[in-house]
Image 1 (cartoon, one colour):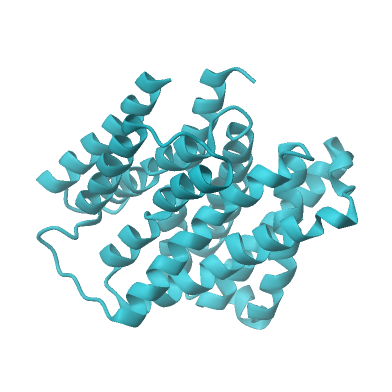
Image 2 (image 1 turned 90 degrees about the vertical axis):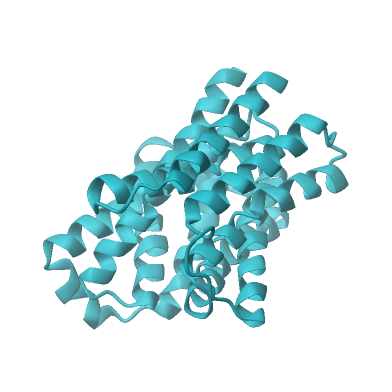
Length: 289
């Protein structure tokens, strides 16, 4: 795959993931519980992917049994466990702290790439990683804002970053044997079925009868899950894992801009500087090749 197209795929995935906060806010305002948000996102994604691939890409349904652990890992750890630990972290720390701990994920990916696959840890990559993390801290509002945290919450936040990073690691092994669509489908087959244990079906119906609930549900499934995972996994076919993970730090920038545009949140100097840092990190990576 052309490297430029691969970079575009990764950037598009980050832009789509940036709408998850918008989706979750609509679902929360409509009265959807945490467990049901986990269920709707993962099981809804499984249903959409099953229909689409049954019509256009049936080869994704076939895998070798010996590769099942890859998909169990990506589905249970990278998707389902991430949802549980990150949402719990948000109840024990301020949202800004939880967000920044989650965006430690690229650091874990870069280290894993160096250890597992002997990927060079270049000065440019380290610089981009530092600039990107600084940008996330600025965008989150941690600087100059209210910040609360407990050690248990920080531990969960670090765990969420590791879960987030693990998808890139599992994808590296999955893509060695299968195309990207197979990796995505089996990941969400595991996550979707697992999420059923969190569901409270009777309480879902009143939520989806509201416009906010219906729009939020469609957005979290299609825009914030199906599309970004397809884009990101396709992008990994042509972009080295560490670079791809760093680029996805565009996500909090998009989420902040959505908040400013849709919910009229305040635009601060820190936000502008943070956006500049994250864009600068992508430029650094592109320049390095």
